[in-house]
Amino acid sequence: MSSLLYKRLLSTTRHLKMPDQKYIILLKDDSDAAKVKDVKDKVSSIGGKVTHEYDLINGFAADIPADHVSTFESDPNIKSIEKDQEVSIN
Image (tube, rainbow, N blue to C red; front, side):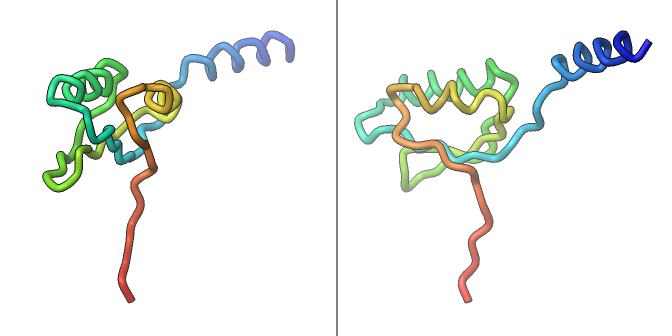
C-alpha cells in the first residue's frame, strides 16, 4: 500500500507548476524592436507576464515560472536575466 501511495505522490508532484518569480531581463544593446518582441512573446508562451517596460535600458521586468528561467539564459538576444529584488538607500 505504501508503494502505491508513494507512486501517486510522485506523479502528482511532477505536474505541479513552479511558482512565478520576478526577473529583470536585459537585452543586448544591438537588439532591435523585433528581437525585444520575440523575447516578450517567449515570456507569454511559457505562461509568464511582462510587468514593466523600461525606457532608459533595453529591457523589461517579468513574472516567469521558475522552471523556465534556463530558457532565457541561453537566448542569444539576452544580455542578462536577474531575479528582481528590493533595493534601499540608507
